[in-house]
Length: 114
Image (cartoon, rainbow, N blue to C red; front, side, top):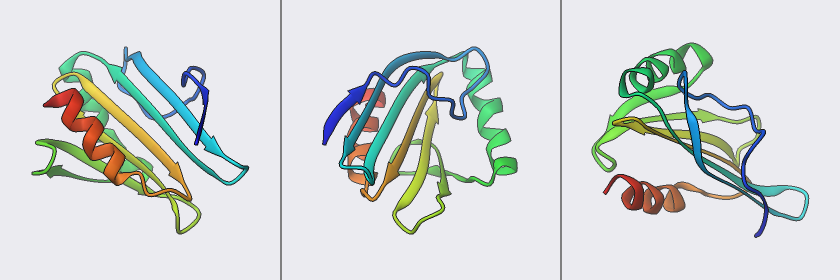
């Protein structure tokens, strides 16, 4: 995949007052890609934002793997998905198209949250 941008300008679910700390947008051809946005916000804003996600169609639960809230939203296609991991003022958003991003997400979360 080729890095396309730093993630700025993408409008995705995020807590109130979130600040983008790292953003990456990788694309292969015209139908495969991965968007990663890592933001920070006040912990109570992160908790409130997770609580709002089910109204937007996300399924959320606490993940033992991440020790954090983990929310998913299936996309329009079979290989399209949005995932959010949230804990302690950190909001990690990943969107994939024709790419399984869960292995990447696991490594990213481990690196960010420990």
